[in-house]
Length: 252
Image 1 (cartoon, rainbow, N blue to C red):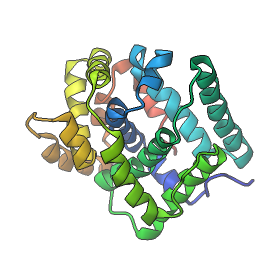
Image 2: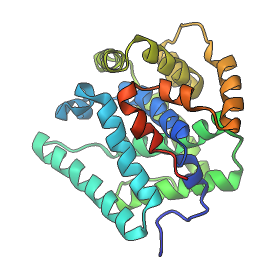
Image 3: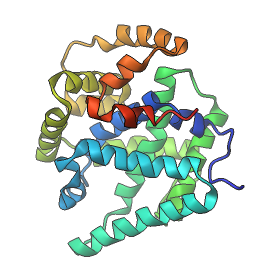
Image 4: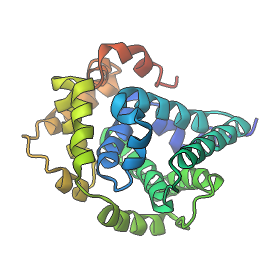
């Protein structure tokens, strides 16, 4: 059976681990709060009302595309496109192409950053493969102005970070919602993860000042991860109600 993402793809390895997947969305959560198009996420009200539920909804779609057969994956991509078109129709405005590209850029970047933080450095060929998977997804969505290759993506990514990120009232409110739904301890843990994960420009805009204790903790976690006893730290990222959903993110 033909699949959208090859069975032996590095993308499947990255997204087949619960902790890597959660780290990807921890990074994306930081950038969504800063993106100049974040008002679109507030239009439906779903993200500020239930950021954790929105997180798992997004993960479900992403993993369906990555692990399903090609026909099912393409149907999922088309459904995402249709949902966005519906939001645009309801608002009477058009989501800018650069906002779509920014989401694509995030998925590529945080797939790389999360895997390299938790596992090992990726090869150039593996990075090209990650780019190819998400770029094909974006082409299916008919997003304009896409980069032609990984090198072009890297240049466009750095440009978009400088042009499309800003600290706003939406940023303040969204982080308040993160704290409300995570609880004080988990919120601080996620902030620490974001601090070591996000690009320097994002880090600077968020003005993280808390003492960085996550770095030595990550060294211990990697040892536990290799020994297969990493459940505690991984489950600590989100409230207990999400324990089974987190467990379900591991692809055996």
